[in-house]
Length: 124
Image 1 (tube, rainbow, N blue to C red):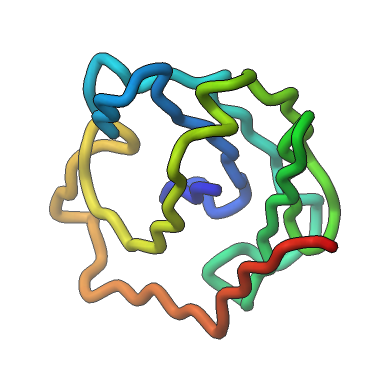
Image 2 (image 1 turned 180 degrees about the vertical axis):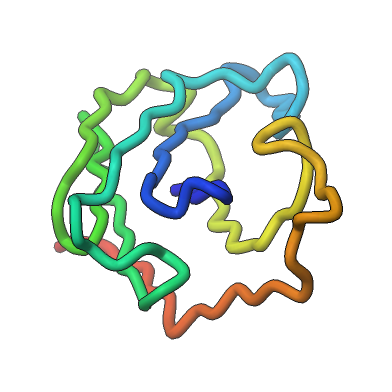
């Protein structure tokens, strides 16, 4: 899940993985089905206005992405390399880069990345 300013009304889902053992998060071995966006429904609070719940359910066949308990994307899984890969949960507040661009004199600092809780669980 990614939210990119100034688009506080969109949530992006991205899947990045490597088909080899030499995983490079931003390098040539970074493959994936792509990046998908969903617009927040009209009248819903924006990300910077309230706490928001995000989720991903991962089974042997697919990944299902959730925003406030509503599924907005289902991706079929690529097979063996994806399922056997190590995965990491990264929570960060990034500023700059190619997407959405580098800070300028309109960029507001300081920023906050407030997380109430993170849960990881395995279904029976």
